[in-house]
View 1 (cartoon, helix red, strand yellow):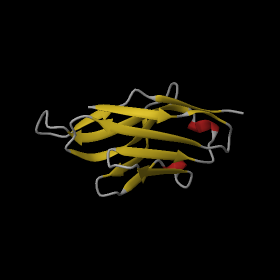
View 2 (cartoon, helix red, strand yellow):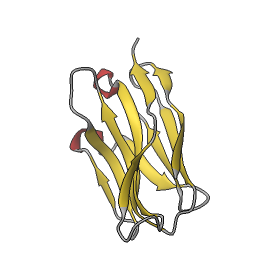
View 3 (spheres, helix red, strand yellow):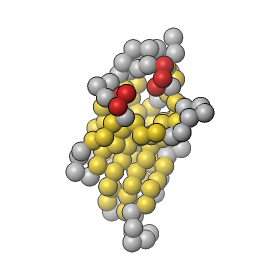
Length: 120
């Protein structure tokens, strides 16, 4: 299983960026997929998550600015980030909790991370 992320980059304050992540491999089911981020010297934190029932969860500070949605298939998620702020600067990691049949349990998987920098 591999989580392939794209997007990110540099934006000015108030600008927008879009991240996408696709889970690839022999995947039977995904219970949750989304994004975490980690700023320098900070712990990794949840940004946005979408669950198998399509419920969503957001970090409080991104509510109203970020939107997580499914892509063309249920193994792909997009994160539209609007009204970006300097404090959104971080490495963003795609995350998925999924069942791939390698064991009897769901397991957590992480993408490599993509840099998002918000700066004027």
